[in-house]
Image (cartoon, rainbow, N blue to C red; front, side, top):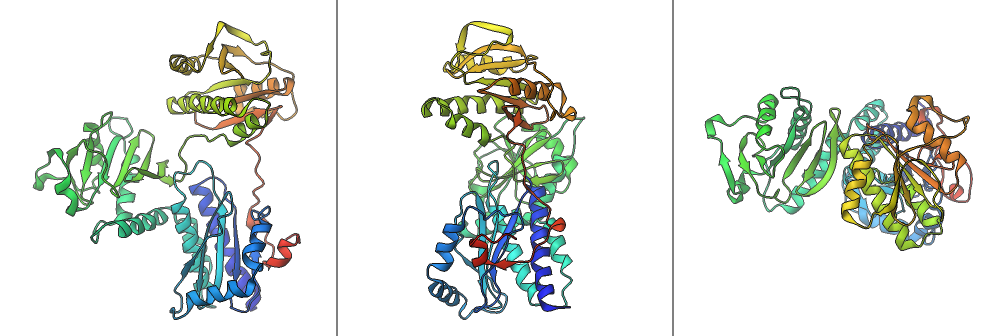
Length: 480
């Protein structure tokens, strides 16, 4: 096989694997790499989705302001290192991107990039994913006999191992003893428990895993006799025991092998915890959320809409910054409340000085959302058919409101009446933002008849695979 073609295949295959794997773990994800296989090789870039566009000035500053010094610094890092050893380098800290870079004797430099989605519990598992891609690229690039599609497969299915790698790294760094807890089996058991029903109900409650060395520091409400302690892999038994701690501050405690007992203390630092919340849950390290789990898999999402587009619309409006920030916080609270309660709703945010007239239950006087009791009332209004009308002065003007409008060409009949009514009404009324929350959690932000958070320029790599290009040409505007 032609060496140039083989090397392109290695980079393309690994990038595709990372992209598909992260798209399952997070939202649709784009990936790019800047690399130089040899010390004297020019820097190349492979960015099929153009996620580095907009960062040209900083990339030029880092790599080309003093290229000789940059290469010397990398050479110092790998001096004396064994073949295949990856030495981490500082990430480029590009806004909106997660990156991981490394250098090695047999692959001079590489820096991987992917998107930092706003609803991620933690970026660290994604960093471990990029680190694995860097290691696999070195191996594949230098081994002509390797079946490169095996690396693709590994990276497509790396979520559980990425979480495990991060947890192991953190615990080794901060614990003053060698932990004997096996992380990967625990993560598999957590997923299996989350899929197991008890009398038709999903698991609720908390379970945490701590090392045997730390058990004596835990104040137990009660313990299970040693010879009767259920093993963690017996997920049906563990699911039954969770009934004892659901809807409370109590937690099941495990040493990684069996259930030891029940406690009501806070989760210890660097203990691995699973918080089951019915059809979903969260994986934690101490009190830090690192992932969610649902549908039998781990995911990066916090399961709460960040609504970045709404925040931008409010900041660009003529409402003063302090008021627009407060309005955004109140709207976010209402949306998250509806999401947690698993019911659909519609909010009309009216930025007009004179509120638009909506047919429905108009309130006299309007209720100020600056009053905490009115926020609770607003959450109840969301459960009633029709939209809740909120004005720019942080008041509820009405509820149960009907939205109508003329038919528009870009309606989506698959989305139902609530969504399409919002599209029609928004197309006919300026300075109105409509938030549509579906019962299954998706949130649509509609402005001027357009769902502003629906656009995606993601383009599958397997449909469009350009060659890696010279980084200098890329920064000078050459299109791939």
